[in-house]
Amino acid sequence: MKFDLHCHSSASDGTLAPAELVRRAHKNGVDVLALTDHDVTDGLAEAAAAAADLPLRFVSGVEISVTWCGKTIHIVGLGIDSENLALAAGLASVRDSRVSRGRLIAAELAKLGIEGSFEAALAYTRNPQTLSRTHFARHLVEKGYARDVRSVFHQYLGEGKPGYVPHQGATLDKAVAWIDASGGVAVIAHPGRYGHSRNQAGVLIREFRDCGGKGIEVLTASHTADQARLYAELSRKYGLAASCGSDFHSPGESRVDLGALAPLPSDLKPIWELLEIDPH
Ligand code: AMP
Ligand code: MN
Ligand code: MN
Ligand code: MN
Image (cartoon, rainbow, N blue to C red; front, side):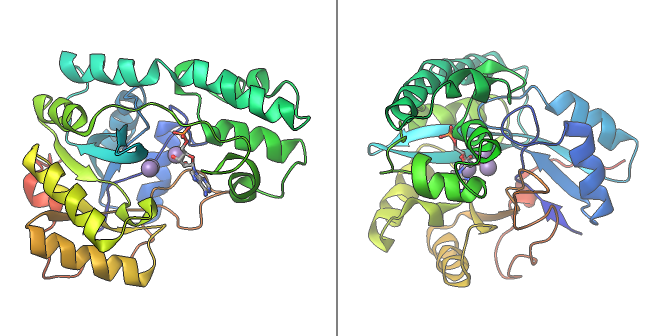
């Protein structure tokens, strides 16, 4: 069975509609797919309906922005109930600051002579509350300020670059509690992206586990082979389940397609053992 438990649709910063994403996953041989949009669950109903017509099992998910030790990290929730009030209110509170933060990004870009990016970036969203750096990046590429989205982050929007404005996320314990309250399992997304030392990674994992977190992404598009080995080792050491997901955003932008990752090392406890996956 092929699992892809992390990807994005046009409900957040992906470019495919949820149903298109599900059909692409099926075409790529995915048997179990989770949609995990940033701080929003609006795409789940459409994705689940599309999956119901296919031999593909769908897992409702979300990726929550968290501020931990002054930096942004991402926590994926899998098998969530998006109707849960604690989760829905929590996600709304995290989305809340995205528009005002978008204005601050536009103000920084204006200082560099890039005018009008707030309205232009908003035009790339389906819901203004999901406004993200990715939407700004697509606009900047379209205007010729950079070759591709990755280069925009490198030049303007990545941490430490002139257009960088952090987004205030949830606290780690709240994000895990919302996921837990809605019946889901919490997973640390792409731990290799945070620039943590092995020691800091251990601190994060212990704190996450102490508030009820269950899993860690071992395989994800942004991990090098060394990072995959390190986080496989830490999942064994700390007794966390292992997850895998492409973090696919767009056919034109993502290096790793839906379903294209290698399988998890067979000695790890896979996160899907903790999920109720509806057979149909
Ligand atoms: P935001 O939540 O608005 O801070 O935007 C974060 C999103 O930007 C991530 O979910 C990625 O989709 C995207 N992103 C972050 N860093 C990069 C990068 N170096 N290259 C391409 N996309 C990135
Ligand atoms: Mn994203
Ligand atoms: Mn992420
Ligand atoms: Mn993601």
